[in-house]
Image 1: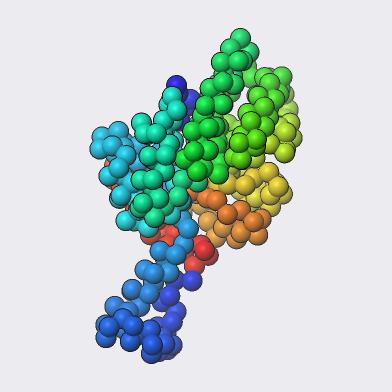
Image 2: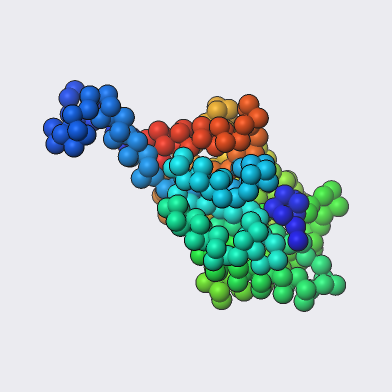
Length: 304
């Protein structure tokens, strides 16, 4: 089956003015103030529930296998994972229970997964049976979300076509709900174009079954397409329940994304699940880019 892309506050303030508690210094075994502050800041950053879409390290996974990548991600400090490799009942080539154990043994959680399947009316039974197996695999791995990451849209797309997909997603969503999962849809930039005078993203929001379909907002692609991520997070809080934190390359490096109001609105809307995704790399080094992205968010005072 198709892979994801084939289907396409820190603690430094406590040091100011000598405010670090004496008992904290004592607990650091007589370390210098600088060492103690660094250790404390690291502990604060490690407590942040920063998630990662594993697609960010797709090349390393293909080259080295999933286990060393999971170990690298855990050492960085990431807590929550979103998978992007499902095929024939297996996740990254492993039985769901095996993959889950590997992740949890490293102190992380399998929270979400990008799992995609195009719709074909002539193969309706086959498509829905595919989803039955995919949903069961992700229930076993302990996922909260199962996310359709993309849909085919071109210049000939009609509202009838979009409605067909909304009905399809609603059916898949009902299956996911029955299994205790949340089904969602992840946007790119094209959803912020119009079809027959209607914004695609608005049409999707309005025509899916709102009881069974949620949305994962990719803030970079939304902004790139002309949308306003903060406004969407505020006005569609009942439907947008997960977020991709993304930038042009590494998080915070482009200067084009203002993440502070995005996080503020995310928290105000009660959104708990969000994932870093890095799709391009300044130096062609995915691991370094994912590490840089983690460090940016770990240091950001507005990230909990």
